[in-house]
Length: 52
Image (tube, rainbow, N blue to C red; front, top):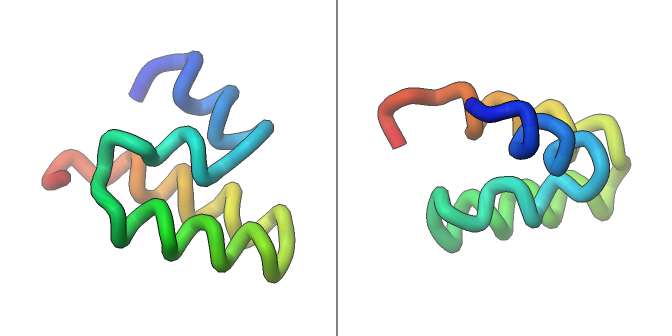
């Protein structure tokens, strides 16, 4: 997880998970629409997951 991805996850969460697949983008987008904090948390969790 690079510094730029983390910074992007804080500023605009859906854009930071673009390389992780369509499902991840949709989940993070929906959570960001519900609230900025849930979107940031979901993006950081997805970025920190080494399996994907």
